[in-house]
Length: 344
Image 1 (tube, rainbow, N blue to C red):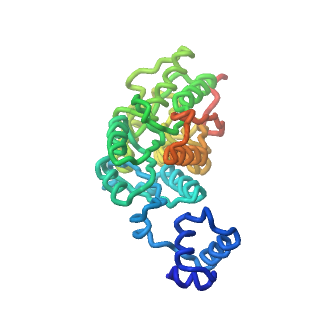
Image 2 (spheres, rainbow, N blue to C red; image 1 turned 30 degrees about the horizontal axis):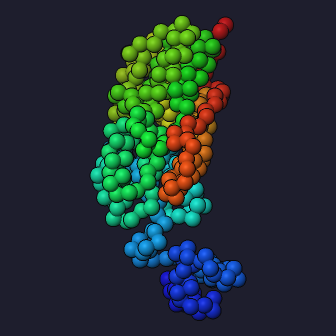
């Protein structure tokens, strides 16, 4: 790796001037000098020594993205399309803002906070958190003086809770309302948590409210747990097809990934979508477009979620005034071919 001294020789400046540029200390520097050093750094693909930077007085320039993802011993988080998408979008926004992103897959809050403190991160973005995780993160981050912003969290905490999420309940309401208008009256909601919390809970409640508005029943048995573990999910779905599928004309999955994965099993078992049962998802990601038939779904914009999360965090890091600490991004209905019209 090229050294600071060599960069200084190429730019015809002192090593301390190069160091000042690397660490963002160029307030009194001539514009021509700054541009010459930046050009030399870029042309020679200079990568700074992060161990040295984290020990400096001017900040590490690191934003940590923590994914509190408990079953990491059984699942590869990179295979989850939502988390893969949000990681990519966050990295782009963090880089654009002039920071470095550190990704940390955590099995616990205490572990995550120890990591953040040891690397002297300037801010932290957490996703995959339930309410208790949020409470612990806020308390711990406050003790370490680390600003934190959540993504897709639901927590009734105080003013220290900053979150960027979706209108999840409205999305559930919109989808179930559409299904009801298409003539469906027996609709199941399927998700991978035994007891829905957070986004799954909000989406299910929106579904329930819409069906009640249309005079369609929704009872506890209409929530179907299908597991986040592929083998267990297939076993549950096989039993569902055999024993319960005939009760429903439409299935509303909590995510496109779960919907598309289930449609593959349905095809293997001779269940036709939408002829035998209609299916809908949530997210409008690549799985919705690659499924056959393509999925009717609720669209969210992951890039907007990353944009607002990073901007909100940087505002906290800079102690700037914040008008809205809980941002709820809009959703929209996307109609494709997986829902059958039963109106005759």
